[in-house]
Image 1: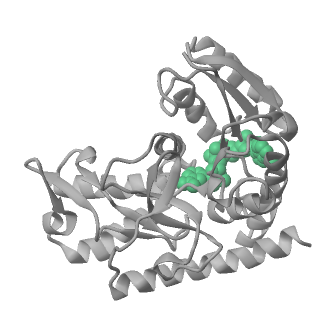
Image 2: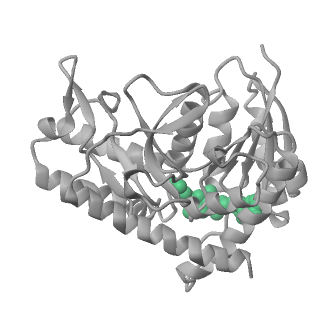
Length: 332
Ligand code: NAI
């Protein structure tokens, strides 16, 4: 057994964390031989609920979990962490404009960026789940100048998993036989779920998804809209937002980041944009990435048709607008 690593989960008393903590603590992310110390951050009014979560983690009797540190203090929460799941944020309340939500949340990520800068390990891997995830990740990184920008990412893996599941269902194969579906841009309704580079394993051979689906209208319309609106569909049915699937996606994202992607495969992550594929620079934009030795690289050389270029431009424009709004808030 190796030395334990410290992992922080923020929003630890919330509903995504309720699924996420169990998955992380039982080894789904860092493997069956990596002991952990979990740091759980939430706000002071949630400390009672958090105590209940701590009791349940103890009652799970998980062999890898060496200690749990519940706290409302970012200085304690981010101390010496190697991995950070930033889930906590303010939920949208009735009557709240998108702008109000953005303004409340980017302030949280400014504070947490500063705390990461001061207290976390310099090679900490940060995954932002709390919305608006891409712009929160950008703000967080700006306030943590001593940590490389590449270490701040936003979650679009849930969208990728949803897209993969839609294609698998359409062609009638297990989900593991579908790969290389891409989510471009923002984790919002402007995202572009792209099946053009996806492959499906049929009779032991990889075939382009479009050749198996054989329905370009479905790929361009039904598929794209189903994935874009899936979050709203879950809220409509469950009266609460996606939590179990969001937690699973967060684990997938962090696991691939730590352990790498298979040759020829890529996954989607919101990462700092270098302008690849005509995306705006210096926003956190979801790209297909391959990962080796804990470092991601944007997959290059994929051909985009005019439809795809238009979709990327729309979601890129939204991210530039969000960046301007966020900058106005944090610099006010
Ligand atoms: P929730 O409302 O159940 O839990 C959020 C928790 O964050 C609460 O316990 C709250 O007290 C805590 N919190 C608020 N401010 C905090 C702060 N400054 N520091 C630490 N904790 C703080 O929400 P849920 O369902 O767990 O979702 C969390 C976030 O994840 C939301 O922003 C949601 O929109 C987002 N989300 C993102 C997805 C993605 O694909 N990127 C998918 C699903 C949800």
